[in-house]
Each structure stands twice: as C-alpha cells, then as structure tokens.
Image (cartoon, rainbow, N blue to C red; front, top):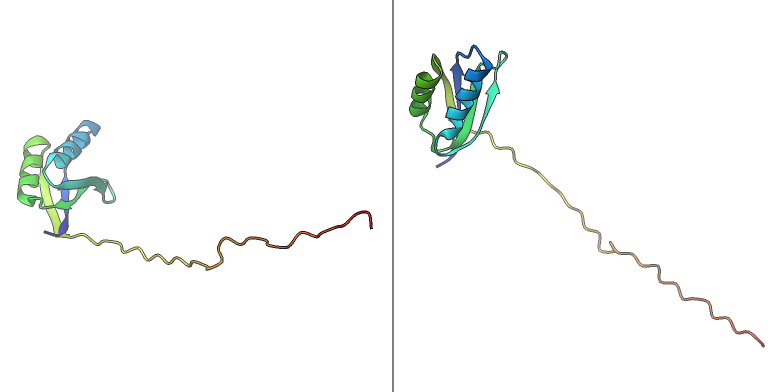
Length: 105
C-alpha cells in the first residue's frame, strides 16, 4: 500500500482543542506524521500508510467539533539526487626521498 496524505479542516477555537486534534490524529494506526497547514493553521495534514480517512474525520468530529475532509491523495516523495565523486588519489602522500648527507668527507 502506498503512502497517502489526508488534509482535514477542523474548527479549533483554542490551543487546547488544537492539541487535542493533533493527539487524535496521531493516535490512528499507520500515521507517520501530522502537522498544521493552511493560512490560518486550521487544517491538519496527516501522512501515513493505510489510514482510514472516514475514521479520522469521525474521531475528530467526536473529539473536537466540526470537521471537513478537504483532500486525500498520494504523498509526493522527494527523490534525493546525490553524486559522489571519488578521486583515485584521495589520500595523497608526499613521497620524496630524504636527502642523504655524508659528513666528514
């Protein structure tokens, strides 16, 4: 099953309700992360694998108040492009023969 992102709009009047909403969102099985999004921070974006969006909205309605399901879709995963260049002479040793001096001649 692929990762999905669920965005839910929740009416939160106080800081207590916002903490309670995040606690409810994170308590579901399969949730990787939950965060506030939107201009007024009244939306919660939940990402994870195998999350039931209907169960999430129902639990938020019971615990916090009015909840509206905004969107459900796949997660846009960032693909990191890394290039490593290994030089064959990475450890360069200064190998110069030491001068040999003969004293007394």
